[in-house]
Amino acid sequence: MEFLPITRREMLDRGWDVCDFVYIIGDAYVDHPSFGHAIISRVLESHGYNVGIISQPDWKNPKSIDVFGRPRLGFLVSGGNMDSMVNHYSVTKHRRKTDAFTPGGVMGKRPDYATTVYCNLIRQTYKDVPILIGGIEASLRRLGHYDYWSDTMKRSILLDSQADLLMYGMGEKTIVEVADALNSGLDVKDITYIDGTPMLDGGIIDSIPVERSIASGHAFNVVVCTREKGWRNTGRDRKLPAFVYRNYPRLRVALSHRIAAYNDQLDMVDRMEAEGRIVVIRPEQPVVVGRMERDVVKLEALYEEGYRLGDAFCRQRL
Image 1: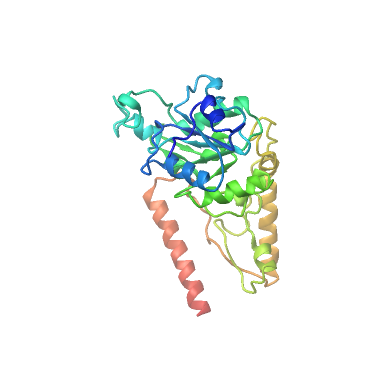
Image 2: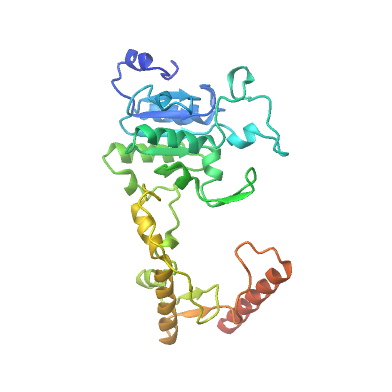
């Protein structure tokens, strides 16, 4: 079995004018099933798709990801078999001396936060080609998360990378479904039905989806509120500039009136509760716990109140 092409000449020698997918990887190209890129690329090949490999591109040079030109269906991006930060740093945050996934153990062939950097490199040249990310780095960072290396909370890698779709976990089935969808002409933004592909937070659009629950045929609906009755967000909405979330314009619009929309939904909950259409469980006292609260006494008091209210609700209903 031949290795997959890693140069334009090798692509042309196979009789291809273009690759269906160009796979950017943070590791050396090793065609062995212990490497995720080998499995994904060979699975795609077995389903008739042409895949070219770009291993450890120069992230300071946009031309390094242009080896094969524009792919027909999209770019695949993986930081490698390890999270790039674990690859680069010890638990004490000291720089490692060798990279086990680079020929000769040479360090410095991939950037920190490799998946994000590679995707942004692609976007410099290809503004509208689908970018699909996967691997351990993307999988573990698919949600908002604490980043040990910077000691900060980071948002989903989908946003920072400007990728269009994230496939987490073992993606050999998911990637075929996604490839078939793209090959059928479906726009990447409409691929919302495939398991293993997380979306941006749906709560931004519909924070309290009780109306959807009722419309789905559920007769008994319980809403659990995190604030006491009558609480409203007193902050002010701000219109976000066009460059923010430029790949997600509808998300930008939703975030620009997030506070007003949420307060409207709280009004709806109060009305539906008064009409007897829903049951609401909520704190009885004002909540004094912050988002990043570290006061154990406050946290325990809130927990105990929630447990007590939930227990009372269950006893009342049983």
